Length: 329
Image: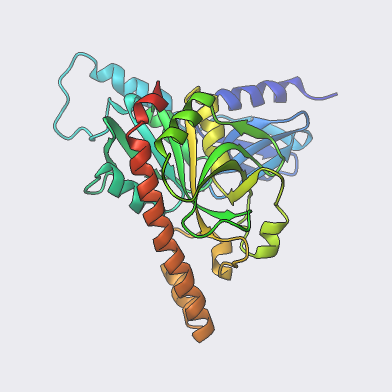
């Protein structure tokens, strides 16, 4: 018979908006953000937001809710400030963040397009997205979006950035407007019809825009064979982070939109170093280039596709910004 205490702790952990410490019967521990459960397992993003981890409920000995609840902290700050003048050093996105549009990407490189669109300057990526305030964040892969939502309480979440193509007709720079996202367990979250229609209207006339499902994996699909293995009817692209963003937005009751741009076509392989997540890809890229002329050529091709993709993403976001009010309503 299963320990009902563990079931109660799981429910508390799922309601908590911060990190928990999960202890297994084998004395190992895992610190992470618990975001979902099944009949026999729970799923977490690890503490570095780089990996999704599935743990069997039968293996759980205890769950300690010892992290910081970011949303509760933000509420406490608001309560303290209510009725008082804001100090001059208050962060630019302070108390209006609950009315902002949150644009999340995984990598700092992808954030360049977001910064250009919202007009962000300085160390904080905050500005305007259409007629509304906006926050742009590179949140990594995993629970970063959930923490950003808890902290900033946005009105709309837009997950955007690079993806791999699962359709052989897609080229570098092509835009994929998500109709739904699914994870590697084939669980699916659909985009709200009103949001999708508004985005579709905003992108009307933009060349090379396709609509379809995005599949999210726990590892980079770096080769053409790995991408072909993910092909299903209706799927257009693969990435690592859209599912986490959609799941976090859905749990918070916030509308979301998935907008991906193709970095690597279906037939193209990515360099081996892209399989691992890095805070910066500069040194891994340099080491790869030092392997010889073929590696340098491979890297140059990826760099060219990245520039094309960033330019395409920026243009698409500018069009979406004009219709952001209809997406947020």
